[in-house]
Amino acid sequence: MSDAPRLDAGSVAAAAWPDAIFDILKRFRVRQVAYVPDAGHARLIERVHAEPSMTPVVLTTEEEGVALSAGAWLGGERSVLLMQSSGVGNCVNMLSLVRLGRFPFLTLVTMRGEWGEFNPWQVPMGTATPEALRLSGLHVVRADAPAEVADVVGAAAVMTYEAETATAVLLSQRLIGAKVFAK
Amino acid sequence: MSLDRRAAVARLLSGRTDLLVVTGLGSPTYDVAAAGDHPLNFYLWGAMGGAAMVGLGLALAQPRRPVLVVTGDGEMLMGLGSLATIAARNPGNLTVAVLDNESYGETGGQKSHTALGADIAAVARGCGIGDSRIIGGEDDLQSFAGRIHRLGESSAVGVLKISTGEDQRILPSRDAAFLKDRFRLALGVAAA
Image (tube, rainbow over all chains, first blue to last red; front, side, top):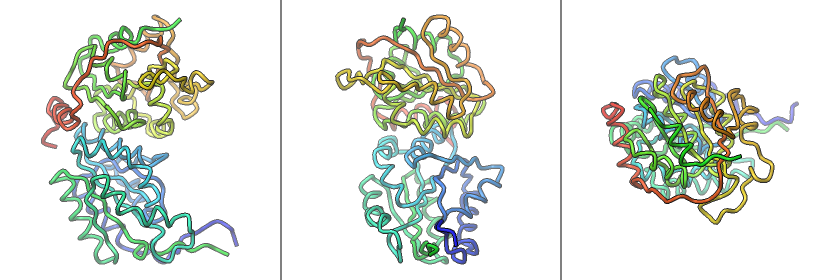
């Protein structure tokens, strides 16, 4: 067996909720999709790369996506930032741009460190994520079950692109499936 | 030899027609404002490390308009990874001009990493932005100024070696929401 961590394939690859998110982003005419690669978002990232109307932007660190999102909106395009909860802390100062500029901003955060987490290094930021986002001025909503995802992301998209506010959707670790490490 | 920052920035912006401009916090914001306020300037007063990425988002959204980011060495150093991110898309309408005085002018003139060996143009080239140059004199500046207003094949980075010393502070609006709305109205995307 390899020592490399692998995702519990049954929970994400076969799940329909990433496709539901993709459909919502497409329906809301989201053009720029910024991401730091993440197993929980792997299916969605694949769909974005295959979609001609969307521009995927792979980041070296999450706060780049916050600044990218502001630039996209200055130029008239809608964007979204896909990241893992560990990346939320990287964004804190950059989110002042979103708040002061009253930029519409949507981020979809896959949660680590909250449910069956094997790696203790994920726990501090996972625990702090909802409050860190709220302190930074975002409205925070959460999906815990596959059946909720479309409604929650759809509602967040309305608040972002129609009300022009800053919204974070937390996709719970229970929904995504805890990462399983090969022994 | 080093360039005068105000004169160099004014030279880069002179004759602008469809250029969209993003500035990094501190002196680059004042330098661009000193060359003349414009509704298609978006000034950052914070969000350090984000200027080049705001420029990338704008360039991807407006592929037919040239986009210029004017920032400083300290601000660019905080977002070095964004050079790799820009290179991965490499839009031909994006140019980043780094005003490099090798020091943190806002905070007392402490030496920056470019005084201690870091070469931002080499980093940009190493990230995959082929047109990355150091601009040390008037001829280089002239050639770089020509590049900024055109749509190229790929992104460009110019590191302008400027003299230290502080000019009079020309302070544009600090209201990011106002600047954003003004920019979008002027660009004609306010109903997007």
